[in-house]
Length: 277
Image (cartoon, rainbow, N blue to C red; front, side):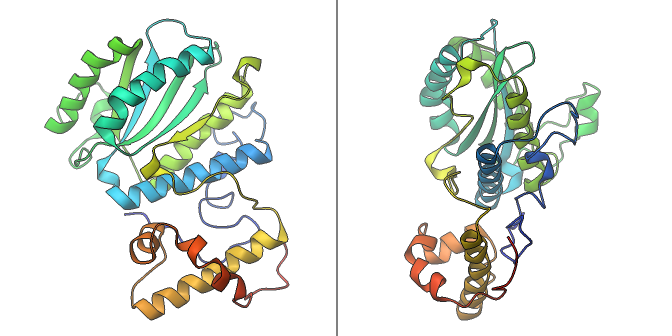
């Protein structure tokens, strides 16, 4: 499984921010004509990366599926798109998968569609030959994955959706975070006025480890991250366990570990007090 390092970094911050996931903050990986993201959308992209990586730690990357949902008709209105998605979320996605992360994207032609990372609940990755699928040979798909394909063929149209695609995660958690995150940048390049106020990212309760309500550009937040690294080292030493992952911290210290230990973390010495932001 992928682990999330809490070692001190440069001003980019933790693994999962700009230093480790550059494609989350601009489109220079694929589309050079798109603009860099605003600070708020960079925060959203970072939170997305942390949530995806934490989800991989929680369930195992072999259980994660990358689900793309498109509409049968030419849906341009984000309110209509969200109405249909909420219905699908409440009646299908939530009950079937439990943990999921959703990204809203508008294509260049204006059509809305969605990308999701979902916990399928079983291994759909082992033995799956991606190179064969690219040649339209699906013989390596497991029975569990085939059941998912059959389910979506019969279900999507009932909620106003059309073509769906569900595939295993091809590489690792960081890569899938980057892959999903690039859709934020792609969407912002063709964002419509009607999209104002639309939530680009949505998570189930169990998949929401981080939010975008933080600052990674201030001196105080940089010091907090450095002190967090000290805290993790102390926790690892005292518990005799490697605590350098979100899942380990939640498991041994509780889901609100940062909040519950905030006073102690703040009281720790800053290992690099003169470090720049």
